[in-house]
Each structure stands twice: as C-alpha cells, then as structure tokens.
Image (cartoon, rainbow, N blue to C red; front, side, top):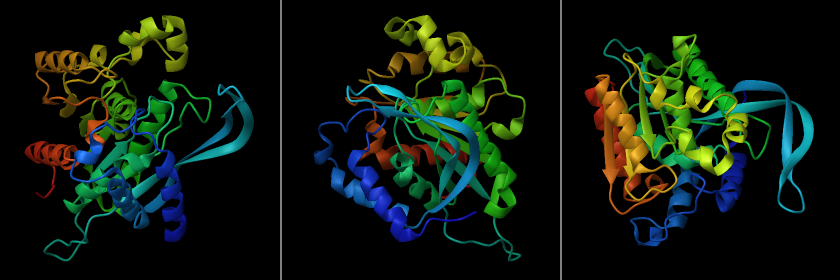
Length: 325
C-alpha cells in the first residue's frame, strides 16, 4: 500500500494541530505549567508524524458525507464512492533473535477521543512513540466520525474491530505477535477499545489480548436523560443495554487497565469504579488507576503522558507482553 511523503505528512499534521480538540474538550487550563507547553507537545507530535508510515486498512463504499450549514448545524453534504480508513504506524528499533530472524513484537492500537463526533489519531502519537521505544509496533487508528459522515456507534465499533483484524491478518509482514495485540483509547476511543473486547463477537481475530483505557466512555445509560432513549439509540445503532460495556462483562475477557481523573465530569469516576467492581466479581483482571485534581483528557498532557504510559507498560509486562522498560 502507498505511503504519504514525509513532507506532506508533516504539513498536514501541523494544519490539523491548529484545530485539534483533545478528547472532545480543550486542554486543561494549567497545561502551560506542566513539563512541556502546548506548543512543545504539538511539535513533539509533528516529529513523530514525520517518521510514520500510513496505510489504508479498510475501504467503505457509498459514504454520505456531512457539512455544517451557515447556522453551524450538521447536514448531509454528498455521496462519495468510498472512504479509506488509515493506520499511522510507529515502528520500534530493529532487533533480531539470536538465530538472526526478526522478533515478533507486541502491537498496540490507539483509538482517539472526540465524543464519537470528531478528533484525530494525532492525539496518541506521543504514547505510540513511547510504546514503540519499548518494543511494540504502534498504530494510531482512523475510524468514521459523526461530524464527517453518517455513521452509528455500532459501525464505529466495526471499524475498530476491522483495524484489529487487519493487524492480525498482516502480522507476519508487520513482524508482530498476533497473540499480543493491545487495544488502547481515550474517551470515545476508550469505548471503542473496550467494546472491541467485551461486546459479543463472531470471530476472535477481532478481539484484543489486553485493553488500556484513558477516561473511557463505558456505559450509555447516563446519557439517556440528555438525549432521550430513542434518539440516543438511533445514534448508537442499537439499544443502550446491548452496547454498554458493564452489562456485557463475562468470564474469560482480556486484562484491562483504566486511567481515570477523579474530577472528570464527562466520563465520571463512578462509572469506572462500577465497571471495575463488576469485573472483579467475575474474577477478571481489571486495574483502576485514579489521579487527583484532574478532569477529562488529562492523559494528553504532562506529566501524565509518560506516567500513564509507563504504568500501562508495567501492567502489560506483568501479563506476559514482551515490552521493555
């Protein structure tokens, strides 16, 4: 598959950074007091982008696009023949076995946030680089967004599982271990990573071997009051119960770690606690790590970018994933 030229990728990335909204909300107000300024974080992501490979993993035919009218409301725009969804890939330093063959690496797929409406894979470029430096092949995943095309959340889950399938089907070429595939994500992307593991499935090739979550959306019941059940379920593409994560917990699911801000009002701590308690009742490995005095999207600023990434690596190493320190 074709790869975008480095100069084009860098230019596109810098343009996107100017308008990017992290996890559907702006940076926390005290970001400039952190280790790196907003501008330094954006430049760091730009450097990661310059060395990435970009490949299409799924082509969706007959897509209805959207645009905003003069009053700022979304409306149908036009029908296009197809839409390609892409993966941005960060590879680890080369390594060989003692016999001289290539080492099969873990894979980690990052799903960005944005309320199922917006957002961009660039959100997780620094985390992807962190995992790649510790031996994983890292992927930042595009999926269909409600601000751009007509899509349900159920179809977004299909996009997430299609990415997992593509990675496993191309494991040999990518030099990854298909038994060590990790789904990770924040906010709405956290829901997609989690749903790929817990919702019923017909093929295990689409299910991750571990899940790393950053302030994830978990269940939909809390949103019924805001939108009404019928309207919400139209957006989901199914019932609230069918697509909520906690009701779908069952024995045998992969290990899960959740990073959660205690002051998060978008995806509250109580949801993560309820989910974790239910998982423990089923004797699942589920670890909840909380952070005081931070709200939604905290994981995209310092010092939490590296803090969460290192704790995730330690958790995965304990589960047998071949990651370095």
